[in-house]
Image (cartoon, rainbow, N blue to C red; front, side):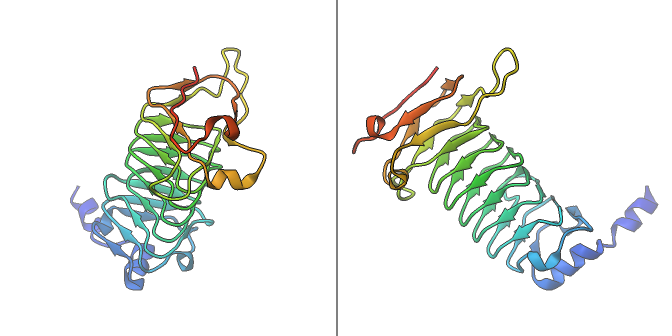
Amino acid sequence: MIEILEKSKTLPTKVKLLLKKGVRMTAPFSVEIGEEVNLDKIDASLIIYGAARIKGEQTLISPNVKLGYEAPVVLINCQLGNGVELKGGYFSESVFLDNVVIGSNAQVRSGCLLEEQVGGNHSVGLKQTILFPFVTLGSLVNFCDCLMGGGTSRKNHSEVGSSYVHFNYTPNRTKRRLLLSAMCREVSCCARHRFFWAGRGQSRDRCKLPMARLFRRVSYAARIV
């Protein structure tokens, strides 16, 4: 045990290099940087709170990113835009554009694209999901294999209520296609109208929801079971 403690006094080389570069870490001995990670792709303004594991040669971290404010973070081959905050959880092979904020205990698996100012509270599960700008996810949400858009700002945005589940497998193990929750004939509609999936809801089959019928100046709440 004494030998282990003695060895732990020496920081790993890549952690030292990041600290020298200007990256701030509240617990550098709890940070693990993979040998394959290109430090030139990590901006010096990065802040790491507590424990973090950063892996993957494709990892890119832009200015003003914050990791692990609420819980430890695992980051594997992800690309993070300016001002992204990943407060805790597992994030793999996905893209987070500017000012995305995700709460703790998230699991974002491969193939996700979260565009500008997307938000998510705690315990969000995503895989092969595309969220257009400003879309917000509540807590305890499973939203895999989905496409969602709508909204023009943080005050006028589409949202998935807490405890919502998208069942993307049928009982006979057939995987469903994308759930399209912001479809319209004109692409520009996706940037104007907001949409709300009610909390404690679920969807079990392919859904194609025309904007012309669902979006009005007042917000609608829809639940598909």
